[in-house]
Length: 324
Image (tube, rainbow, N blue to C red; front, side, top):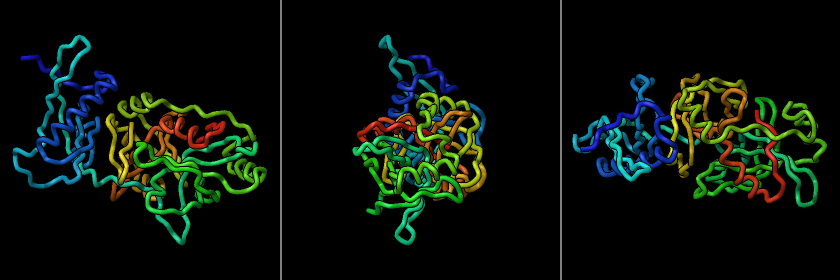
């Protein structure tokens, strides 16, 4: 019998190993419960609060039943065989926790009076086909999952918004929740308004410094404090969990997401999807969802995941220039 290895810290395995562990755990959960699941790496929760510091595979089921037959219960610990580089196997022991996937929802605002009201995570600048400078925003793609509207009002502050038209939104199968919006108006007037909002200081701002996906995951698993930039006052949060094998949110399965929490009530309320998050001075994620009903927990996708898609979507010399 191979010796068991209890995994207590995120850094004990590589990102690829975690993906394999989570994929294996999903198959175990399907065999035990009959339900498909999403699985994150975090800490066990009790009474809505983290319980201890040891890692757990947090199982998100579509339906978390109150009464479950013993044979259909997720075991308190997973035992997973993981192949090593030398061809041998380790038997990993990782505790489990069970949550309801239905508690987490996309949090873009709803359609009102024929208009969309969106929050924005990134300011974009690029050269149009006509050679003219274009300005736009990156926001969430799920804003357009249930409507064909092409125009919306994108908020950057509680009192400031820009009229925009949709340029392109990621399809559900692309595992990204992002859309590019073009600001409507004359370039000189747009630039003057951006300066008044203190989004830019000049017409050719430098690219922003984004955290890599790996850096975002490490920050979340070290439970670093971060801050949101929703329309309104910024709010503090703490990193809690990563999802190495995707996370189902509404009609999309999104890659590389993290969960943050221990926040004030309504920090991740409806209408704030698209807002930027940061750890320290670096831009980290764009909010894509939150946990009902108090919205103290949020789901974010790393901004670094969007850059290649944005470049290909615009097809010009797009450059990310600002975040707030």
